[in-house]
Image (cartoon, rainbow, N blue to C red; front, side):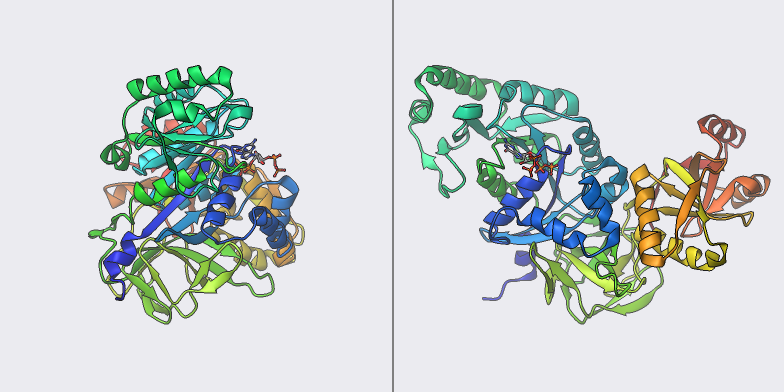
Length: 522
Ligand code: G4P
């Protein structure tokens, strides 16, 4: 019997992996894809990185610096579920990209290095997940190496993240003697991930036999303590974002990944309801809705094509259908939506709520755009962060000013940089969250547009989006501050200040003006 829409939607699991660089995100992604049959051999994800990088000069930066700039999505099936992993750049200079990606997931896997515990970037990413009530599954990685005591790791998660922990599995052995995990809930033991079905065991004693003699007694006692001292897993608390189930393993040595993938299938939520301006949209509604959270350009540098990554929020997307773009009210044909598998792109004939598709376009779609089957609604919550660094772009060849203007507009639409046009007509200002984004901009302007540029410091260092309840107040402020006013890509007013002090000073002088550091796309 054909699958109903509700069934198809309920099989979807869309998640991101959050981690501090080096904790093992790439390795874990690779192993998940391996189990899903999406790749044949471990090593392809990294190998693929190298291949893609030759496609575009802009990605040279990725290669040279050994960082991942591009957010991508990969889809695979396992045990009847469809998993969409959204990859996020590890480097904090691309934090805004990561935050936007997290608006498109329903759950996250937090990877912790067992020797290092909660690291700064993990903490930051966790905070974003918490802001959005995204449930988190914890994977304590690298148990095959010298690691901290599991109780200590659990304590640290509880303390630093104010999150209850529920170890679902317990590591058997440590570093060299690490040989699998004991499932506290159903008393089973799984050695390496090649073992598909875990073994039912007769209590801790029989599991302890996998360990050297001198470690057995300690293991049995530790397990007893874990049972007594740790909370049992409570799915409701997990879905509400108060509790994280914890798994121990080693992505590199194939331990614990199968437990993790099963947990994603069993515990992680199906596609969530999404809040739009006029109503809440339920995932299993008949009509298709989606929003764009990422634009990636020049996947093929010969054609200036862009792929807009859209998360489907409800219904079913069918190839060839027409969708309404809320920002303009215009229709666009979805003639070639694509799915992304680890080894290839594929035309998507149908995609369901929870899935992420790539929509090729020539600049029609922007970050934050909503697509519907006709209804006029706009999804909320794809954020824009006020930049930490502001620069003016200086052209080496002044004749190319018009070309630069176009190029900057395109880069801004892709979310590479933010673009601010001063009201006094002076040259545009670009804003970024991290310095590496400026390198990407420079590299791409040169490689793709033939525009060598350098950057100058403007007299501003901070900016805020402004609004007021009374339009007259806003107008008054903007007139009086004309030399400090810009418009962003959407035409929204942005106040530029020399430094944090003058920002505070002006905010106090004009109490009717609201100044915000985060703007939600609309
Ligand atoms: P990231 O994406 O989070 O930055 O981490 P990645 O997977 O690239 O892993 C970082 C390093 O940690 C890699 O070693 C990787 O092989 C290693 N690693 C990942 N998981 C485990 C594990 O479970 N156990 C052990 N012992 N090591 C693990 P590298 O030498 O930096 O890179 P590579 O040359 O091996 O690729």
